[in-house]
Length: 495
Image (tube, rainbow, N blue to C red; front, side, top):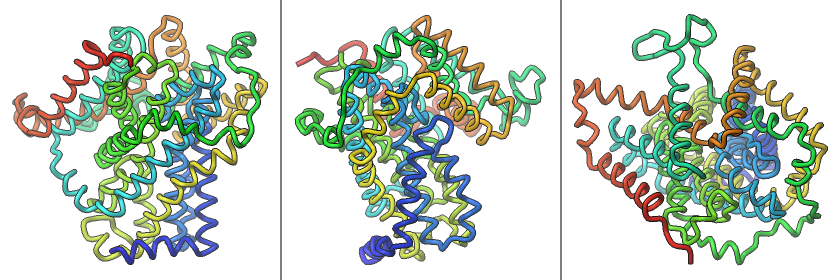
């Protein structure tokens, strides 16, 4: 196996393959950073072109897009408070607060370093423990998956800044919104009011665009004085994007490592994804933090935890894809299609029979993770430039791209209007100081919470004790109670 892995790295030494890696990485940066143009959309657009590509080049390119796209969602989140993807929500919360304090370069450098560390560790896990970890994932039955998603929902509420009751209201609204549309289990529409458009449900991308792009545009558009106040006048150079190693030591390698492990483990579970990974890692970091009062106000530790988990998730998500034939998230679902196009069938025997073929995927994921850190040293000043652009021009550009991106991913004019409606709804909530991140997480996690709950009840003939019949689920509920206790009733004291 070691020889095949080394062969994967050797494949990247081919100039043509390396150019595909760099091209995919840059494509992921662009699509990940611009709201509406996600890594999922980038790989989806690339999919038809992979027919004509050599297999190694196609696999290398999609993995580079995957890694850089997940990272890039935080760039516009930090600079202009509009994350490129849902996975950048927590980073936006902490990173933009640092940006407003004049620490934009520091936030971007710590963000890239954490993403790079998480990505490298996630790729290392993928390389060396893919099969054992896939066997562990098989131990998670449907009630255990429900317990995991339930823990994520509770975590979202208790880590949100401000009133826990307002957080509870918004996450409940998100869960309600997630039930709109076609019910696959009984084959009928729900809460669609007889509308042929609503029966397809409220999709995730319009929700993200509405809550984090349209809402932010409504809040900041035209408020020139406030916009100027939010963007400190400071000059940055390339050297300013070297990480503050004193701050890195304060964060601690254990935070990076633990958050990366959380990201890998959640990435392995179908439906986990970067958003859930970042929230759980963020909650755990806050639970053990000596300065929990800084969370929500520009915490370097919280930013590092969320971003480490985000990119570590990439390696974890590929594990069930290759070993079980089960995509871990929407991006790996499209990568599944790339493999099938080239005659590779993901499943238990793939790593045994085709290890040499898929090894360049592992190498590309690790090299792309290193590129994440290098990219901020090269492009960092241009990221800051986003915050200095004329706000009228910048917001008009973001609004256009966001709406075009919504249509390009859904091919639905109705979903464009839905993004606008959700943005207005989010804007009204923000005016009343309700947090929007729990609302988004309710929309993301709601379908999985409902699916696993209903499947568990069906297989147990309605016996609710099925949710407490496994040591794994009991352990997850215990962790949930510990989170509630330590984060809300007994928060750690500041040093």
